[in-house]
Image (cartoon, rainbow over all chains, first blue to last red; front, side):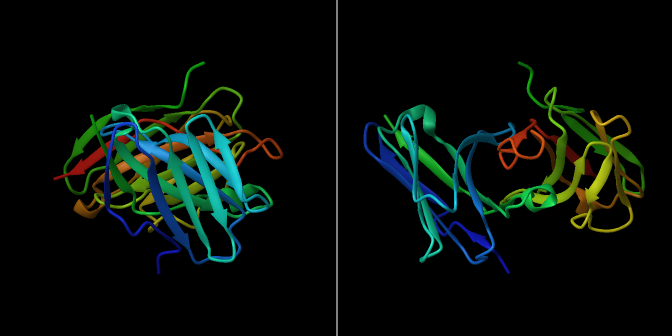
Length: 115
Length: 116
């Protein structure tokens, strides 16, 4: 049973517009949520995280929104750039430290930003 | 500073052989994780080290898989009697110790293992 779901395998947007990537989760014990970007033949690169006690975190062009009641989070990229084209993974972990921080990943969404 | 490094980047081996995959974490990171990523899937947790000890090995698929971190820095993932189903990208990640945003993990480039 998948605890973290990214239901859109792919997304295509125009350069300069907003990209919205979605993620749903089922485990109410998750305390931290993270987004990673992955280029082919490279490891995942950490982008941004959010704690379950917050509903928004912003870092430059990237903003993550968390809706705990709906068990849903989204990553907004504004404005989108061709270099943002990659696979984006949503991940979640428990709290309290130690092995609770092991990450559970979704299957990823391939974002293509067209010039 | 230097990120997480993994060697080799690619490994092709025959079914039944033994392989070792190495991970060098970010200097000062005390937590180290191994994940495995199969085609079309997200990474899946294998094992977690805090310092030298394996604090959680619940993700290891069977007893053919073993990992060590003898001095609390470099880690080696060992796979015995490899099977074709072991083919995947093996990722290593490290993070700061407890209380320092240690839920944020930084990944290496991975080792692509192919078992023929």
